[in-house]
Image (tube, rainbow, N blue to C red; front, side):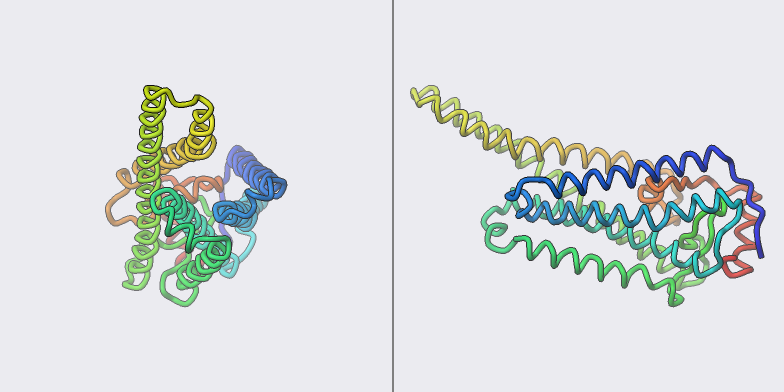
Length: 301
């Protein structure tokens, strides 16, 4: 069954613009990482950042073109197979990106709060292994609906597919809460690690100020001050502001969505990953409800 979708042209412009910005931004990030200094490329954090940029770029390229094609053709360009692929891509790249960001936060936490353990056990090989485990684990998590543990359906306005978060069958409901729970845990760990690192960096800066004051009172040489200042300013302070920004973004994007959605709606945990793709969820209207019911009856188009 084909559905005559009533799609607005301004939504096409918005989706195309966000797709272009997403691709361009990630390409610029990858180029900057490639031309960075050799010593920076050898760090664990660099490896994770590269993985994050590539993952986000692939996620944008795998999903946004389908949305744009739907707007252009004014109909879903494929059948159930494309719907399943689109939904899997949304699930995988959303959770994989969040997992890598969580790994970055944990890596910074260990580097700042447990420096000895970090120096002995964390390196680029460990980062590559973490990326591999992240991808494999998320493939297993996100492929479950394709084998009946969950259900893929098209959502209003008919331009994208995702989990049926209103599924009433036990398996569908359990998977929705499983995926939402995993995302919530990743967000919580990321925020907590970032806050812990920020607290440590503030403490380090305060202790540095005390040491400088004591050296000054004791008539210590001023030539030690620039070196002491560079240790805190060049690295720790930059990471401090970066992590503060990341924490604020996560709180702004996550808390309002969690509070505004009903307690039984797992979509509230993955909305931040839908919006960057230009896919905006709106409350289901009567016409959308009819589309959804007809879609479910036809097996996702």
